[in-house]
Length: 366
Image 1 (cartoon, one colour):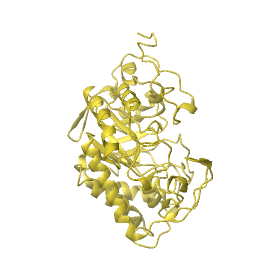
Image 2 (cartoon, helix red, strand yellow):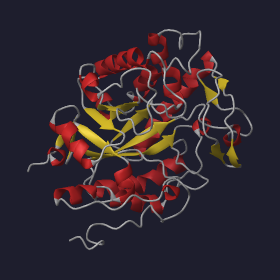
Image 3 (cartoon, rainbow, N blue to C red):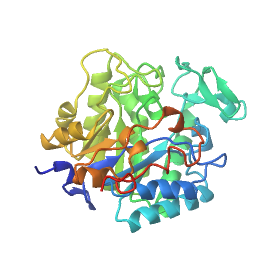
């Protein structure tokens, strides 16, 4: 039986050897300095057979930090730390995009010298406590960004893209999903602004589009992707006008000749239940470029989505935590490794549950 996932795909001017993407996965192995390291080189090299690797979320500024020991891309040392990773992936014939991230209110003053985190509006995140550099704490009310501060945030994204390009990345993905800063501006639940960045659906989309425009001055648009989560409840999201908002955003992004739109269509992170979930098929009518689906897919569901044409690629997350050689195992119809324990996913645990997972050959399957 032919396997559509294993077919090559043309992503703009890039040739991907298959339609399996490695989803961005926060792993917290960058140390306190947030500089990528040799352990991360090994981790990404092990998974380089993916058609497209989208790196773990990587902060564009110190203001964007909100996760212990996650990597950054806002200093030259951080960019230099990423270079061995991109070189290793390219040496294996892979393609890699860096995901650009700003946590916004999904952060804490402990990350910012006791200054509050920033957001679209001063609305506290209601959810589980956050792990800060000083331990587990409750979320706080963020500070709304002033209108005249926003050009500086956009400039941070552009500077991050410049460092990503210098570090050898093939492109970048702008993270506008999962309750982080750009998603906070996009949704009415978290954006109560009265300036040109709030109020209407058009205004709430403004920051995302301005960030895309700035980043596209560094990478051509066909090397820039965007991630959306229309159905998500993660980080206390979900707005009554989610369908209208995300439909408008997708239709505007469709005009920009982007590399792809990455949609968190699955419900594995929870569903806000404010209506019917938005589907990949629905986004096909809004965005004519390459479409990546994500969230809760296994290989069978991924194959079905690509075969029926709902998506061009599927990003796999949890399977890549446990099984570095997913592509090779799918080619040979071999089982994947068992899921890894959650306490090794994104804690600074070194190699455990990170680079010590066996390939099929090491597991005695071939």
